[in-house]
Structures are given as structure tokens and as C-alpha cells.
Picture 1: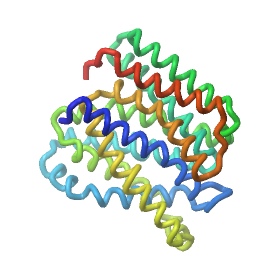
Picture 2: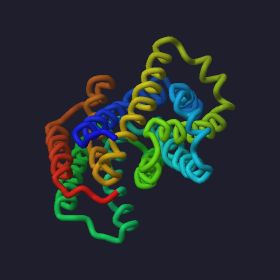
Picture 3: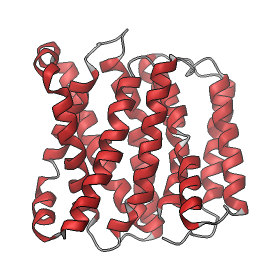
Picture 4: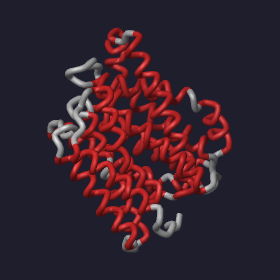
Length: 294
């Protein structure tokens, strides 16, 4: 189990990788960019990432109880497939910055789910952090830079955000007695297999569209946001808990907007910069709150 400072660093790294992922995904899937088909691409990306977890999957399959394997499989379907498939399909018509904004609703959903489960009201620091973070998101959304997308794409991204929030609340039950890497291996595999089935009909056509630059981006997304980030998040949240680690998801629009500026030439305005500062402040304040029981 990592120490709290180590857990914070791991969680920050995971969110940073996830924050820039919509930039690469938008480039590969966007209608005005590479235009790859969404479902086959997600299956390929997570199929490649799952291979990296095989050394930890085998001992988990041998040693875990049937109950834990079923819970891990359910978390994988909800969190890995339930987040990534609709999120990537939405990313075809929604800009990288807007995807980051929509995913930043996850901390509020997590707080609500944790409060409902424990039947308690959020504390003062939590409420203050939520208000400041939501204000930062509102400022980013008000700017014209990242605010691009159609209703269907936005709904898909929000549905994925809700599924990931459910995953964050459910997964700590497994982390109490199981290795974080084994948990990542089980959930990743369980979520990837149905995505490969969904994307299989169009896989051949997509592979025929893949040149080396597209393969480079796909491999970077598989190794970084899909593989390393998943392992870092799982280890970090094992120490911090669902609610405390969830606040770091407010950083998603900061990294997404920055990546959109650097790679996709999406403009950055003064309001976006101020919104990013408020989001960073909300994460800082959230870490001053008493640690919730896990």
C-alpha cells in the first residue's frame, strides 16, 4: 500500500494521462481528422493494453475467489467498457476540451454516490471544493475554445462519466485484500473482451486505414492512458479512497484544454485559464478535508 503522498502522485499521474487522452482520441476518431471507426479502435486500444496485464491476470484467476472474480468482472464491464466505449464514440463529434469538461462532472457524481451509500451529507471542505471546482468548470464551458459538440456526443460522454463514477465507488471493496495490479488486470480484461466483440466486425476495415503515425498514437494511448494510468489510479485510490481520489478528476479539463491548444490548435482564453486555476484550487481544498472512511 503506497503512502498518502505517493498515492496523491500516482493519482495525479493517472488523471494527467487521462486528461490528454481525448486529444489523441479526438485526432484518431474525429470526423475532421483521421476518422477511424470508434468501436473497433477502442477494442484495439484496450486489447493492446490488456496484454500488458497478463502477468498479473494469471495469478488472479488462480487465487481469487469466485465472488471476487465476479465483482472484478462487473467493475470491468461498468468502468472499463461502460466508460471508454461511449466516451470514445462521443469523442468523434465532441472536442477534446469539451470531453474534459464533461468528464470533470465525475467528482460530483462520486460524492453523491458515496453519500447515498453511507447515508451522510458531504462535509464543509468537500462542499467548498465542489463549489469552486464547479465554478472553474463553468468558466471553461463559457469560453468558446473547448465548447464544441453535438447533443448525442455529449450524452454519450456523460453516460461514460457516470459509469466510471460507479466503478470508482465499487472498486475499493476489491482493493482491501487484493493487489492493485491484479485488480487492474481483472477489470481491464473483463471490460476489454466485450469491446473486442463489439468492434470485431469493423476491425479489418480499421486496420487497413492504420498508417504508422496512427499506430504510434494508438500505442501511446494503450500504454499510457489505458495501461499505466489504470494501474496508477488503482494503487492511488486504494490509499485515498473513492471520494478523495475522485476530486483529482476535476483536473481533466485542465489537461484536456492544454492538450487541445498544443496539438489540435483549440484556442485558450483568459476565462479558461481562470477556470483552470479554480479547478486546481478545488483539488487542493478537497485534500484538506478529513479522509473519508473506506
